Length: 242
Image (tube, rainbow, N blue to C red; front, side, top):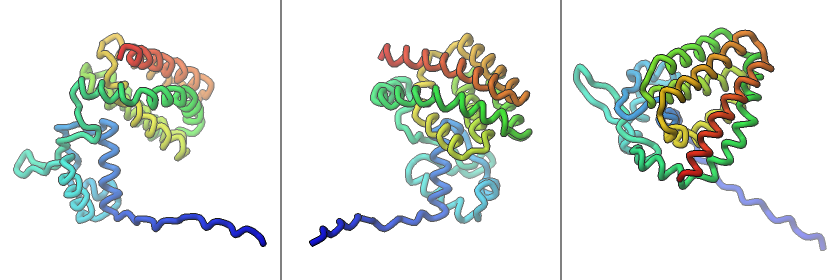
């Protein structure tokens, strides 16, 4: 008698509502440190336009994130919706280093993946980038070079790398670069802040942008290989010291 095949176990899917999707995007922006505690979000009307939803949906998302103690709405002339918490938890130097220590293996795996992914993304972006992509990357590069504040530098550095992913025109590059950044951000934030490190990163960004502007895939790949290798060395030194 033939053996009956075992039935696969399927579970009902949970259909996320629009405000939950909006809330998740805001969480990711906070997790990437593109919006830091103390900073305000755009007005509700602008958020509704950016997300392509109604203001009521945005208001529901904000209410959800207020219950999570991630956002706070303030009234008055200087009011708005402000980030008051962090998706990661303790944002003190000790808290960040503790998370880096706990996530050591994931960070090491991400470094190996990044060494392959980002140079390939840079080469792809050199052939696919459009003028708005170049403008976004140049703006991020200028902003990073203009600040001496480490948190602001990291915000613009993240903007540049995410814009590179979008410039490839390939959703998998873009999604993978964002995922990598989520894993590596604590380690990058924990690196010793110095003008020398900022200056080196800015020079490497400029070389990358020159290659992208010229549409030179080989030069873009090489520029990113150098940039990634330097960051890899710094992060591994940090992990070894913990």
